[in-house]
Every structure is written in C-alpha cells, then in structure tokens.
Length: 244
Image 1 (tube, helix red, strand yellow):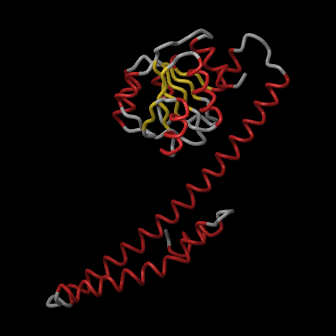
Image 2: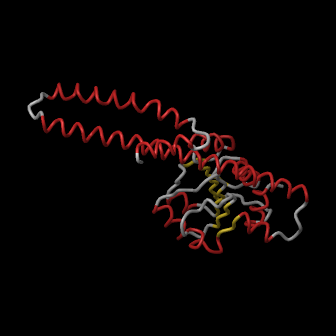
Image 3: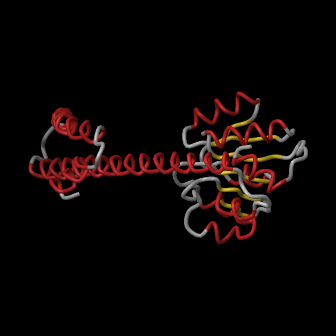
C-alpha cells in the first residue's frame, strides 16, 4: 500500500468512486499511483504536471484527460478531490486560486515540503490533508516495511527538492545576466541613435544585428558554465562580477 493509496483511503474510503472526477497534479511515482488507484475504482481523472508532456503521457496510459500545470477554474470546479504530489511548489494563477477556495473539493498534498503556496493551506482549512496528517491520523501503527518506505521517499523528496532549488538558482542567475546584458545593449543603441539621427534604417538594422551577435557570443560561455554549475559557485561569481 503506497502513501497515495493510504491518502485516498483516508479521503474517500476504499469503495468505488464510479463517475466522480479528480485532479492529480504530478506525474512522479505518487502521482502515478494515485491515478492507478482512482482508475481501478472507476474514477475519472485529469492529470496535470510541471512538464506538459509527462501529464499527457500518464493520462494517455489510462485514457484520461490532461491539463496545464495551472489547470484553471473550469477544471478545479469540476472535481471532487485533488491530489498534489510534486517536488516543488504548485504555482497557480489568481483565478485558479479563487476557484479552489470557493470549491468543496478536498485536497491531499503528498509533497514534502508542501506544494501549496502562500495562504492556500489556511484558506482550505479542513479540506486539506498533508503527508504529516496521514501519519498522525493512522488508526493502526505503521509497519516497519512502510516506515522504511516512508523514510526512503522522504529522502528521495529531499534530494529532488535540493536539485530543483539548485536549478532555480542557476536559472535565476542566467536570467539576471541575460537581462542585464540586454538592458545595456538597448541603452547603448539608444544613445547611438541619438548621436546619429540621420542614419538610414538599413544601416541601423546592420548595427543592431552586429551588436546582437556580439552580445550573444559574450553570453554564450557564461550561460554554458551556469548550466553545469553543480555547487552554485559559478552563479555566485556571475552575481558578484556583473552586480546582479
């Protein structure tokens, strides 16, 4: 019995849920198990994932629908329950948040740390169950085998979260570096056009292409280094050197 099975048993019991609609956010192991559990009991599932192709593939394996990572108010309003199993936050827009707050759907967050952002846990109140709530509400003591599995999954979640955090830091540094370079490029070109107001449009285009090529070549190596920055050293160096 997986954590997803335990969570769904706690939320809706162990019987059939024929025709009821559910949303599964996440296409990893827990997401796949939740989809399989509900499929076996006759539920109708929509799958969302940070990677759209993963959502499409998992949904297709069971003949279900798939949705964007932010599924929107229509999907939220149509489901009886939501299972979130992510290595990182579930970022949704204002309309989706409002629909979730106004709905009656229960939400199970199997993510560690929790994936719901800001005040959503407080807004959902008793409709939300976390992975910690599952262990506290267990009627029978968990077996040694399940405890060992829980420990392994927690360690796996921690590793995935640390990897996601490192990737976020690299992307943020790369975006900041690119943005700084583009801003400087635009400012210098603007000054040049003011000094040379009679320059023909074709000549301006040639200058812009040349400057763009120079900027791209100068950024290529730093961005490549950031892409392979395992320990964050290059990201910090870029921030220090370019005052990002």
